[in-house]
Image (cartoon, rainbow, N blue to C red; front, side):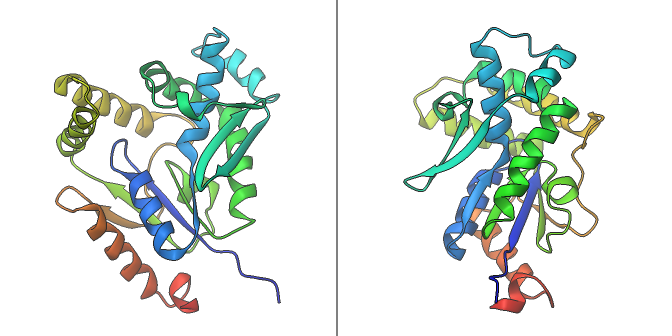
Length: 231
């Protein structure tokens, strides 16, 4: 009998901790994670490295068709390769952070990334996180989660993370950037950020990461179908 492939689809607003929650869930389940935002970031980093205008949607759309994208897990860590180059180390820079929304909204880019996501999700049990996983990428997943939190809470968390790394961030700028990203995500014409109709919505404003993970696992395992039916 063929092994049943399962997935958990996690969507949510910027800075809500999707990657952290996804990794913790995957670790408890013995699955892998797929951070789809990293793929968009890698494409953006590749375009910026070539001095391309990422705001030229027609140009970016034409380029997207010819990109060769690979996701590999090296020592358990997700790495994204674009045209043979590992761009993982460049995904969190300011230039990529500021420009990825322009790249991610291009229909041809989203189509390209969607194909990569589905190919991986169809091959093994995986926790996939992003902004349109439950609504577009994996609409048939029986385990859909949508994470949200107050913008000020998300900004404070990000501020503390950067301070812990020895940086001197501006709280005002972080907060403004989060509000801007929220607006872009919710109003884009292609795959706007919305919870799937059957998603379990979790407001993490007053919760620790381990509490969120435990809540999600409890919710999933009590469903008549999906992950809980097999365990």
